[in-house]
Every structure is written in C-alpha cells, then in structure tokens.
Image (cartoon, rainbow, N blue to C red):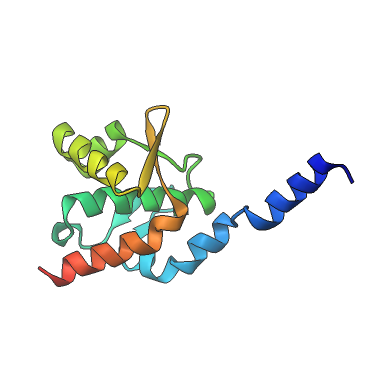
Length: 134
C-alpha cells in the first residue's frame, strides 16, 4: 500500500464522522421542538415561546433532519428562506445569523447556511437553558 493510500485510509478511519449517527444522537431532543409535513415543511412547536435566534437555528437543524429523511433536497437554508418561512424582518435574521456564526454553530457556504453537526447538542442545551430562564 502506498503512503498516499495509507493516509487516505487513516483519514477515513480516524477523521470521518457519520452524519446520521450525529443526528441520531439528538433526535429525541430535536423532536421536542419540531415536526415535518410529508412535503418536508418544518413546523416548529410552540414557536411563540422560543427566542428568535433559537427559532432560526432550530429551523436550520430541521433542514438537516428533513434532508436526511429525504423530505427536502437541501440541507442548507438561505436568509431569504428564513425571512419568508419564519415571517421575520431581514435585519433580525441577519443579526441572528451573525450571532450564530460567531458562536460557531453555523457556517456560510455560497450564500446559504448550514448547522455544524457537532454543535447540535450544545445548541439544544443553550435553547433549553434560555427557555428555563423565561
């Protein structure tokens, strides 16, 4: 086996995450916050009681779960989609996205945003804490 093949094998064995396994870790907690229609629409539960920044990140998490359930082709969300779907002002969405990016919870990719798989647990902990404080 060549050095290049050995490196490739090592990377695949030691540095590759199983996305479905990561999503499975948090599925019961995520279920408390959302459900999906058969067409893939994300329905946030009790969204009136959830802070705006949390609604935005939960929607982005929902996109991941909907994508892996094959309910939607995209696992990313755009600011325009968030504005339209969550019925929020553009400035509110952009400010929340800035905060979420600074927290390291989402990343930008060609004008769309995706949740970092490894951040879902921390995100849910922070939302749970914020809701308990209300």
